[in-house]
Image (cartoon, rainbow, N blue to C red; front, side):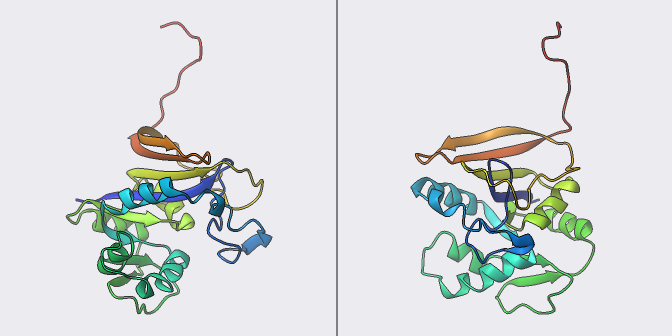
Length: 206
């Protein structure tokens, strides 16, 4: 049975929109695309490779899939720890608009998202991984299907853009299983779902 992990770039104020470049997602008049680029250092490569090592399948939103499909099939050197995984392993894309996919190993999912993903998680393997795909990740979090969050938190505040944990996100408690701070100040952290939050009163006696 596979666990579902989500790997996401976010700012201090929770923005996930267009971390990779200005043209990635300018919707809503967003002008800060590419905000993660100054923090791409050796530690990031080590972190992301360690994530990909655990992958046995990928679940990608349409926009992320199209970005990946336009690049990775053409950049697949032998032994590359990310390219080989993305090109060789199954890729599932929930979509209401795509009718065909040319990237080898891709299966389009047109049914109920919760049902489809629950069935995928029941298959043997280590991790079913979501990379980027913010809107899809939010839907999976709302459905309580995410087991692990890998967050790359960049030390920048944008004040505008799509927030990863938006209003009315599902209340969920997590525990930290791995964390580090890079020389440039980014925080790499892996959270594992613990369950519903618990509450109390600060300073109250037992």
